[in-house]
Length: 203
Image 1 (cartoon, one colour):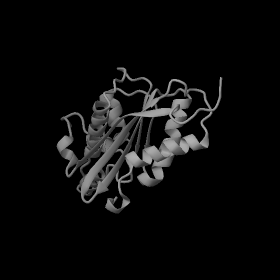
Image 2 (tube, helix red, strand yellow; image 1 turned 180 degrees about the vertical axis):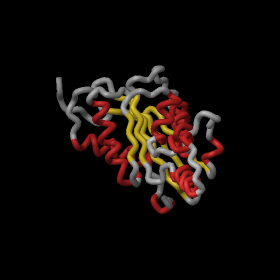
Image 3 (cartoon, one colour; image 1 turned 180 degrees about the horizontal axis):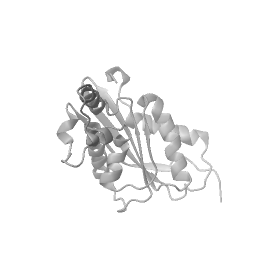
Image 4 (cartoon, one colour; image 1 turned 60 degrees about the vertical axis):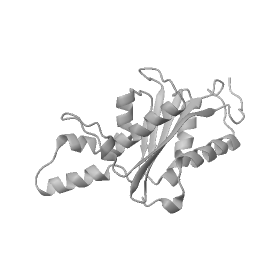
């Protein structure tokens, strides 16, 4: 049965973390037969922190946990290395796969066994967060996900930063009509958590 819901009855923030480093490569756990761009490892570290901060327990495997990442910097570090290698006639298949921008969301799905919907928004986070909020609410209300992880990736003053929020569906959210005012309240909350001071951001 459908019906309108009030604020707080659609989704709630159950975890949040921010990770900022000069060299994301220090967080990498790459192996001889596995590679992902350092930015993806930074996203994974932020997700670890968000889950720990809220003491969130996800099912394993997490069949209905969704992952959504937004950012315009992406895997440029690996892409630049591939470009340089191509100029020398050398391409690493591992780095070619691990340099796909979608790995920013995909790595956390692999390491945390998240099997719900996943999406990378390869765009400026300020433009992406309203889209991410709409998609997250739709997934939760339609019953496609019980939790949605939303992360934004920035470069701030030469340092890379990821902010990560874990949203949980409210018990009465599924199959309900979500008023515009409620969506705006959720969007405001996500903007506050996921977007830094724009004056600090260089990419």
